[in-house]
Amino acid sequence: MTETTTRKPIRKAVFPVAGLGTRFLPATKAIPKEMLPIIDRPLIQYAVDEAREAGIEELIFITGRGKTAIVEHFDQAYELEATMGGRGKSLDVLEPTRIQPGNLVTVRQQVPLGLGHAIWCARAIVGNEPFAIFLPDELMVGNPGCMKQMVEAYNEVGGNLISVLEVPEDEVSSYGVIQPGKRGFGPGGALTEVLGLVEKPKREDAPSNLIISGRYILQPEVMRTLESQGKGAGGEIQLTDAMARMIGQQPFHAVTFAGRRFDCGSKTGFVEATLALALEREDMADEVRAMAKRLLGV
Ligand code: G1P
Figure: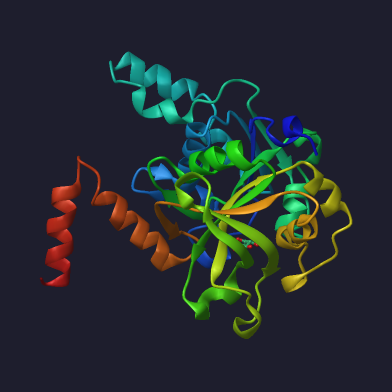
């Protein structure tokens, strides 16, 4: 692979949002889990903001039945805007939801065959260029954001990158886990060489406690690899298994994110994210702190 192909800019991002969100039922019976708000922005908005901060403008949503609200959220709301405008209200609050015409594409994942299959559904739109993937359940808070840090690393090393973080050993079996090689190099010493990847290993089989935390920059060859990818953990077509097969053929690095991560796929993670972000908002921090103290009796 030549330098020019490894450093093509990252212009496209894939957001797999077809999941049923069963962990949040009944809240997610009629609305997608990605539309559940952390304070006043739906979860998907945080991922889209992170993508745009990293210079990515073309958004590809892998959706399913019942997910139309996500597309509505990023559409122009004529009645709302006309009414607000007529009342002299500022429309600035809607700014993050504005996507240039043509920059949002949806693809349906017709059957829930796994994350690897969801990503493969985007192959025609991704085409022959590197792309990013965001799992919106993972809320990454940092300055710069996680994807921006990854793009900086990509500009140095090219190839494929995944974000990683350390978790307690008894949690590794819920995630994709890396086998690390050389560590602590590249921008901010954040890079680790990836020698192997396993999806949801048993605790005793895990090669480390460094887990894949829901952000990826991948070369388009992963689509070809996914084509012949058999079922893996949980009987699903796993992205991790396809990436593992690419190690050795292309550069593969992990980026340790300098920032905080909230697992909004779990209820406690969701509450934690809500509280943490509320405590940082100028318009509500004091009130929320006082409320939290009152509730805790401290
Ligand atoms: C997916 C990936 C896994 C990754 C995790 C991060 O798993 O397959 O490698 O560590 O997201 O949240 P899922 O949560 O879909 O089971």
